[in-house]
Length: 492
Image (cartoon, rainbow, N blue to C red):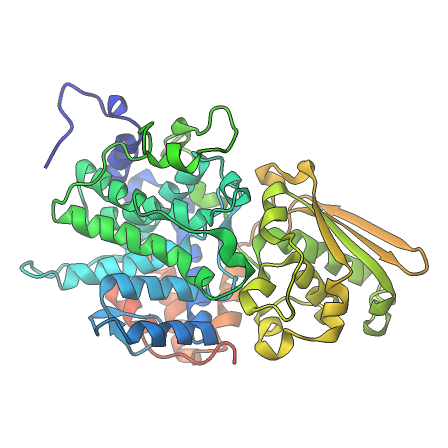
């Protein structure tokens, strides 16, 4: 195993080594109390999404298909009484968190963080309890929480190095790309790998990073793509733990490196920002900039939804159900990334669930008809309603550079025209959940509302209390066992 020579500073080794050194040496005392506290609530939000997503139809199909080729293992699956190997279980749990489009999101560097860190760390913790030839190790809740933050910070910084949402605008499922080194960071921290091993884990994860955003148009695989990150990072850390060496300087290598390759052809100068990987590392906490969804739809459509809510409240007669046919056109101006992500026009009817949740025209029509955009709006019996599609066909989107900065990425300007010539127009820089952010108390309320539909009250309370005292938990197995029991169906 290699090491950093005493004659070489960490800084001279490059940003991958700097990040790895920070991860390896991070202590709870290094993290502000507010960051530690917020991370608990982000995990609770991810758990809520996983519980409600574990038995939606596409999750059940994924479990069934996987069980046909993946042998039975010892690693827990949220909401099921089945167990698989560590990589398969982590991918499955990630797919559940992502299953309903209700999980967290980072606006500047789009990545669904809890969908990566929670599944990675559950499997990593269980691996320490059953590592062949080694004494079983208990993982404390405090260490689990610290490892979560290491992963959050690393995945978002990987995205910052690639201009964040630029990757999304160019067709990459960027969270699935940024999440790979984040997963490796989280697992490496949980395993207490040294800086060199941590860099190996990141290098192994980075060489597997992937994710095509064509998945947004339909099919089920979009739900699993953050699970690719989970698998890639966990594999990297497991191999590095066994002293298997990975790519060194994986981020910054000008030939074949993570930043160089994923920035290729972006037309920017410089094409990537190497320094963003470690900029203000340990003083600026990206964990505090993770945002949470209040609607079961693609994040870049949330500004449009909120604008329509405002219009419906201000003009109830105009937007009454029997008056919607008098709308002649709906137009939304949005960010470059948002336009490519959800501003497309459907070319089939009905859309599959994934496509419906990722299509702004469909999402806006749903808000107008149902006055809400929740999971129930995307059940199979709701996807081909004439009243929704009549509005979809009258809806268009366009790019407005005003919304391109990260602080306005999920904002929009919506114009609604009625047949009598009446025009409504409203602009919003950032919707609720992004700015203002969802408070810790609101995340608890969201957890209760979602999870109560699939778990009994006693278990609901036990999970909440266990997560919110995670920093005092002696053994995180207590939480994993609560999660790894069957749950009800979130959607038929």
